[in-house]
Amino acid sequence: MAIIAKVEPEYVSVQGAETMTGRSRWSWRRDAYDGKIASVKLGAKLLIPIAEIRRVIAENTRPRVESKP
Image (tube, rainbow, N blue to C red; front, side, top):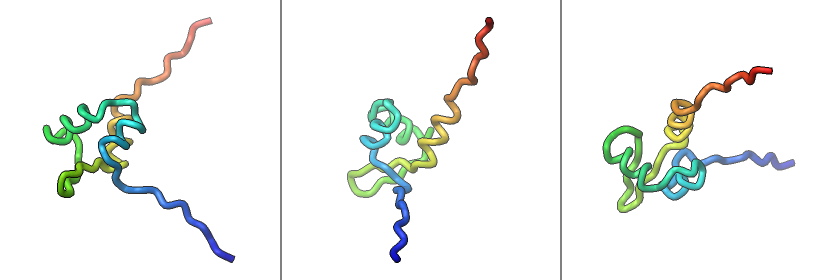
């Protein structure tokens, strides 16, 4: 019996980061080149770690506000 494991990438392109978050690829590029987020440059390709995308989302998550009856 074969076991199939789900493989998730550790890095995505800036286009992938844009698709995942709705934040423009140019914002991801700017933050990478400004040193605000970690990134990897392979030739002409700029890659963003999935962990970094999760960190940015976590840091910008607002707490839920209880509605008053």
